[in-house]
Image (cartoon, rainbow over all chains, first blue to last red; front, side, top):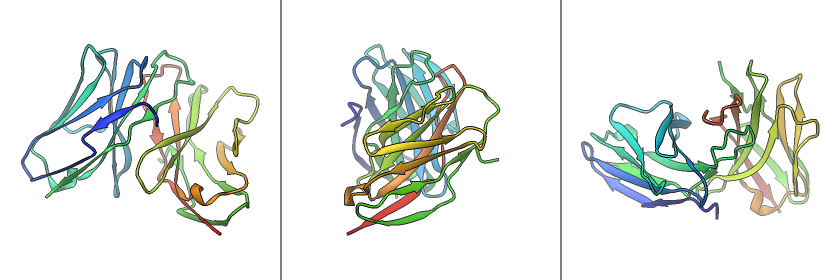
Length: 115
Length: 116
């Protein structure tokens, strides 16, 4: 158990809908990262937050947004869902202390299926 | 260009044998970190081992060791005495730069199958 929690574990929804994925980082970690894993794209970085502020952006679509709250949990919002958004979405956390050794620990993932 | 290359889509090994999973990387940054993660069929990503670009010694964690050859830009994972529970997908990843704000760049992974 990495200490990172994600809910829900599975999500099935229809095209055009909006969903929210939730992540709680390990105790003491200030950084939260979101990744998408799909068969065709592999593991892709979406976005990072550090202590409530957006820190880095990757291949995140405009239909997707995220935030990190004062209690450091994070939510990833996916809207106007398309079939191609079906994937495993991971949240990872790290201390974010600026060291090169900063290891990211992953949550169990949310498997999103868009029908 | 691929930043992380894992050329072995699948590897097969018998229990108790050692296996090496290959990873080559491409960066011009002198400061970087290399990570290996394991993803069993249940889906979670499990951190295994880390190697920093300035580390003089190869990293080891239990049965896992990293064969780090900086000049060749390779960071191969060695699993000694394979167990059935080692069957999983293995990902090599890199983070560049001193600022830990940068994300991990992953390879496409290698599927390891351990048989009895």
